[in-house]
Picture 1 (cartoon, each protein chain N blue to C red):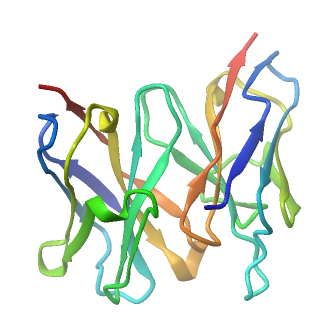
Picture 2 (tube, helix red, strand yellow):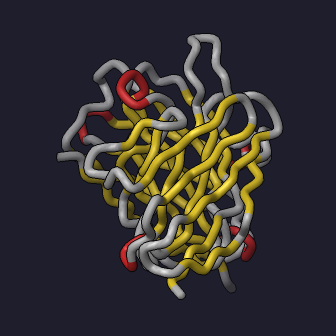
Length: 111
Length: 122
């Protein structure tokens, strides 16, 4: 299994301030087709996970542009440029190069 | 509009077999690139992918749970069924099904059902 490790596990952010979450994989997520299969989800309280970012940096339909993803190989980052109250929840990274595995999750709350 | 909904028992006894059904609309599992997966989440814990099935009937299973899982599809009914044998209290979790459009967004679940909580207890 590919192990996905997220840091930090929790984050308290003042509205309007930026936030950053790191995700490291135990092996490279670069596939033979040249694409890197790293994805980000947000699970809001009491809801199903919702896709935010696919292939490292592409925003899914309807995702605000304050969310951005970056990275390569085994190191990836999700950034929120200005956190809003609706961004609270648990963020997960997931790899798709082998059988899907998720990170442990990062809980984001508002100060 | 893609929607998925899970159904099945809310309570199962230890050693019993769990059967969950994912009913979906807005896509066909006979269309190239489409897939449906099952993911679970124990209360307060992280997500764990269990199994996937694709338009061409290819299947993938969690290596650690493979011996207990079976995933099948009924394209005419727009349903995917997951069975998990020998249930244990540690299998208590919310079980989600989710859609994948492999050739559009890659190997990622883009739409999820609401989930169903399954409790394993005698």
